[in-house]
Image 1 (cartoon, helix red, strand yellow):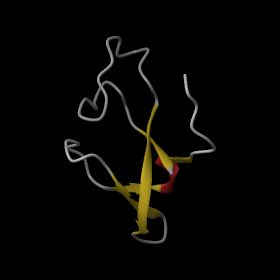
Image 2 (tube, one colour):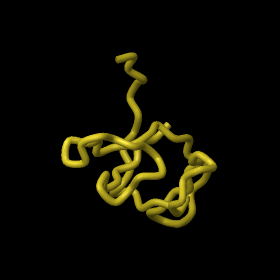
Image 3 (cartoon, rainbow, N blue to C red):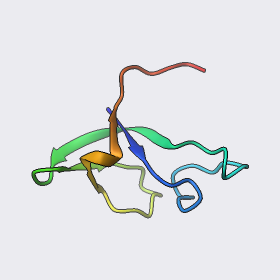
Image 4 (spheres, rainbow, N blue to C red):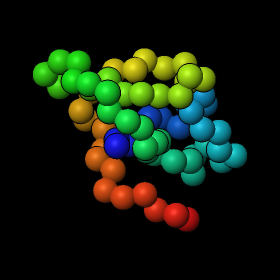
Length: 69
């Protein structure tokens, strides 16, 4: 499971937040499907997401555990 770092003021198809500046920096967790190159991974995103499925490793963060808050 992987979190994706996105710019919240540019991304509105994964999560909507009332205050853009105070929005989340990482979205997810998403399932990592496959390695798409030397430094890129393909993720399984929701069908309503209108973004590319392949991300560079610098935009990914490993999910250490699911919090329940």
